[in-house]
Image 1 (cartoon, rainbow, N blue to C red):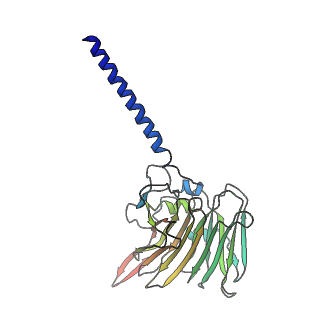
Image 2 (cartoon, helix red, strand yellow; image 1 turned 120 degrees about the vertical axis):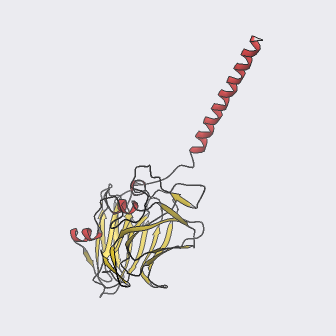
Image 3 (cartoon, helix red, strand yellow; image 1 turned 90 degrees about the horizontal axis):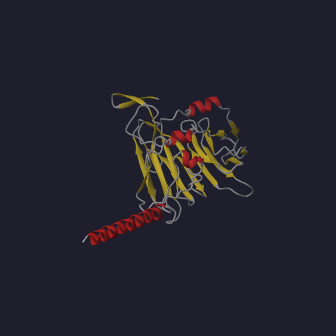
Length: 315
């Protein structure tokens, strides 16, 4: 009887050890391919990396990762970012802009390989802005292109972040407007606590926009600027961003092409100073096989008071 009991106990121990080994092997196999992500400094430090997931409904940003991405927990007066980055007004005041005349081309080169992202800002004296932005990475290699149109370059300036991994890189700005429409351009490196980190700190999740689809976001008049991030899971990115006031009344249009939406995601601040509300419309102009992930959230709010039936804004 004792020998039978000992044999039974030994048999159950062997079964338990075999089950534990099978479970460990299953966990190792299931966690390796799905969690792989490709990122650069702009993608990883600023929360722009898009992991491959089985559900494409949305991508939640991990709040416990320690990065600059945090959840937007509700309306807060003034800047919503928790990163102390210079405001757009401070950038314009501290940097000498370069005047790009209509029909001319200006370039900026960044030979330092540590420059992983570049700020590009445009404004004018109230005239329209119509320009092309190209990222040159080696001879005959343009991995990032943008076409920018702004109806009023004084009321709504243009500001975006371009990823520049694997330097040296050059930024080319061509003013394709007429000679009577010059623009002021500022192109400078984006440091660790720059605009990219500040933009990323106000978004919480990204919505999937399938190829050929359109998404819109409406904002109250109190929202003075909007943070926009567009990325992919490593596939090319082709999108069109519009700032609308009224039916099909585009105040600002940006057309984007990026050969890799993980290495070079699109970061931008869209100013919305209108007192009647604004709409951000994003269209994925790529085929159905190339979805993009868009994050749109308020960036700065203006203080306002009710005066009769109108708004009195104090930025």
